[in-house]
Length: 182
Image (cartoon, rainbow, N blue to C red):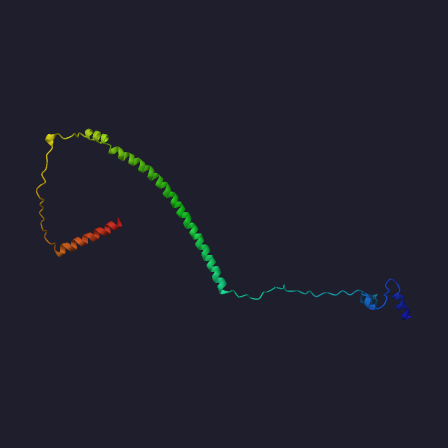
């Protein structure tokens, strides 16, 4: 009879043709049949706490040449930046000097015109007459005879003493210090 029950089990929709290896639900059904009619057991599952897995890389060695090259690149970048700052300052100074040059050129033109007017003979004659000057007459002129040789008398000075030389050098030093700080 047991064999008949087994044969019935495999004849319905759950029938397996050939080997039981093709029946993938066999173990589940057998377990359900063995425990049929029993109250379901509830198992408390133990809580498993997993620590988060941290992926670590192997420590890499930094090449001293790489460190030096990065430092050199940063230094060159700093030099380029400082040169741009200097270029900007020089450009600003150039603009100031060009505006100052334009002012000086216009002032030079005005002063040159004034200078030429001052030495115009007509204006000199007018200024001299306004100051009360007049041309000398023939009676007011005298001639100087320079046919004789020149003569000059040089008097010898007395040699200064030690005390007067010290005093004059001290005076010169004090004067130089006062002049320096003024």
